[in-house]
Length: 176
Ligand code: AMP
Image (cartoon, rainbow, N blue to C red; front, side, top):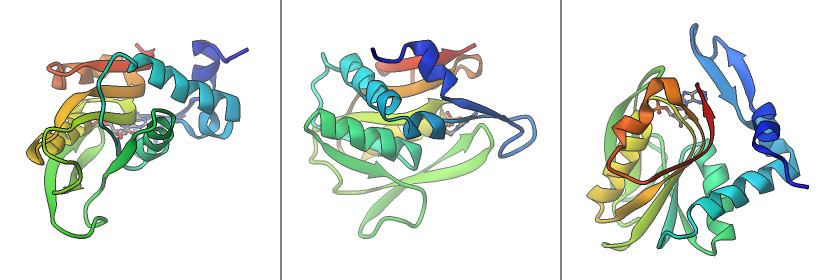
């Protein structure tokens, strides 16, 4: 029997005051370590996007790489990385954003996807939505079309969904 939503949630560890005081960090490592839970999470993501026409799956560094590449593989699609600064070679574009805990920026290779491609963006947690919005901007700046987002979990009280309200959003688990 596959794990239920509650079982998956039980495998996401709450780490108070990490990486800063006041932040309740959701550590997905125990879920990823559990083979059945990991496979269930990825197949639920695949089911959530089954009606979408997707050409590429883009994952946001770092935990979006883990879920995104597994999902891309399951969907028989290629994977594209959206990375933290200074990691990608070649011609890159950058987009800065504010995090629940700080400021940062993301980068993509300018030729990461052919123009007009339909791109699904994957990450583990939707918090304030700044990361997701910045990822969408990058995909659009290189000529891709954002089909939507899929998250393992969303922290509803931070209203990140409003930042990406113009896009389709799928979330397996929610925290109020
Ligand atoms: P945000 O831009 O605020 O939506 O933050 C989302 C990004 O930061 C995702 O890549 C998450 O992995 C990470 N993140 C933000 N807040 C948390 C949290 N409370 N627990 C775990 N990851 C988080």
